Image 1: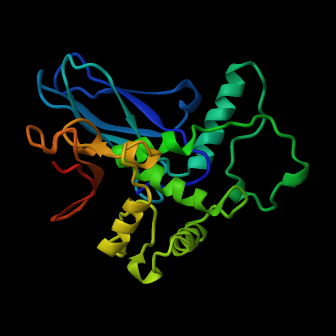
Image 2: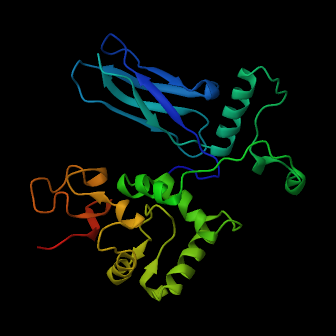
Image 3: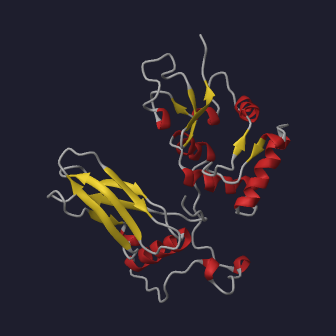
Amino acid sequence: GMEIKGLTVNRVLVTPATIEGLPVTIDLSAQARDVPIRNAARTGPRGSPTRVWPELRPGEAALTINGSIGVGEKPITISTAAGNPTEWFARAARNHILAAGIDVAEQPIDVDDLPVRPDWPNAVVLHTHRSLPLSEIAKPLLKDSINLYAEAVLRLATGPAGARSTDAGLDAVRARLESWGIPKEGIQVVDGSGLSRRNVVAPETLLSVLLRFYDEQSASPFMQAQAIAGRDGTLATRMKGTAAEGNAIGKTGSMSNVRTLAGYVKTA
């Protein structure tokens, strides 16, 4: 349930202590060292399972790292939610510039917090970053079910010059489905990740989307981005040793007491 904005960078390295019970060591990248961190994670017994997770509740300034990692385990890198992703990115960029020996007088600020917006048409472009193509972004989104990616991609549905808001993205999705002949009555969505229980999609709507991107050779980018049963993603440990292993591909969905799967399988 992390906040979504146009710029996001958030990685934390967690290393166990050499003695059970001591706090772990937490390292951020050099560009984000001034981010407030609360270390609630401890070093567990040797051989104990690693369970480390980030916590950042709405309105909190500090990022909390919780859980445990066993003595002797290798350091792990975890992705975290940023309370204000734009400010987090601006802080990282400022620290990177300072490390290069360039003085920056003021503290980083989110553009949404400025009383007067910059004159964007006359701004000087310092850098343009090109992301991976959507066909590559779709793989971690669908295979690993990363909510951050889903929410960000929803905002791309409005096109290159469209508004980057949830409502605008949802309107664009509905318009696209209608252009494909899929009735709007078959879908009710309120976010990009599917976290809300207000999301409702008719089976016929899912089927229509799946058929639209079906390729007999499983070569379409949409099909290649699905998790493979018994092999990878959210299906890596499911259906092993069955006729579905390496055959069924699909997207998982889950909430309390509910498990769903939509995708493709080749019959005999």
